[in-house]
Image (cartoon, rainbow, N blue to C red; front, side, top):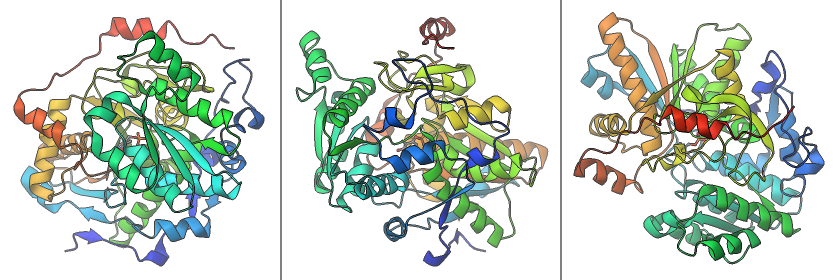
Length: 452
Ligand SMILES: *Cc1c(COP(=O)(O)O)cnc(C)c1O
């Protein structure tokens, strides 16, 4: 009985899957935040390379992965598919549990899958530096790794609270040659104005995004890069699901259920879109696709499907997505990567149409599942990944009751080696379990941009 199902390097997918080809109707277009009119490629050209703008709007079903990108992805891809037999035994479930492990990348998560092609296309179009933001540091370290392979400079605006409390990812960025600043900085007009009003601010992702976008827009050799949410990011992540489908086929399996956590939606899209495509085209009509979010930031389960800004300041294009309102500030739960007010427009669309569904979970239950996983399968998961583990365990326990032998596939997006303080907090006593008050959600939703 195999534990790891592996592909050879030359079996790695050579094309990404673009689910836009298989939607029943095209996505609603992103809107220019100043005019409210559909955003044109020209609107985006000051901060993104043309090829990524093209991919953002592309309708063809497959997009070739450049050879130079494949060469770098080979450092850790194809990633292993594990059969979680010890977890199954511990749960006493007839379900068969498989997971993709993305923690073996140099940065320790799935994020390098898109950081590498993003750096490549920017360098290909003559860009010399990437400016970006990072919250807890997962994206910042992924893009620092990627730019180092293309001899590019990299400037990361890291939310001050994380910069002070979580120094290790900042150090990783430095090892890979990136400059990491505590945001807000005095380097941008936006940062200076925040600091003038509140010198002690702990910063926010919204402020850090505004700083990075301003940096990119005001330097002609510099572009901006985003680690989630956008269509091209989800596209690059589909390599996860394409590999998983091949790996499962090699042991005569196809999942009944696909589970992934949802922050901005990129790892969910990555593992789920190839299966969602099979569902949309009628090849496999009944696969159950489940996104898992924190109850403290319940974008898909309690948000509204509407046009909203991607950032707090309202600088980014307006996207049609599930949102809790752009000035919604979720409580400080330990899964920092899942604290986003909005969601990928593609993932939102699948949930709106019923192709995928969403559930929310509490963080104590998440850490309990993480501990069970670590003690059975060995890997200590990132708190974000543990959301998918929680729901996988819940489905497997349901199978124990019903006797159904479902095949469950989930995405283990990364290891938790830099999140051990969060585990420590869990062991030190019960963590707060937040149910975000409906009244506050209604309040934040009352400030959506007026469009159409
Ligand atoms: C960033 C991150 C996530 C959430 O981001 P998505 O874009 O929703 O995938 C999940 N897991 C890990 C380990 C992350 O770093």
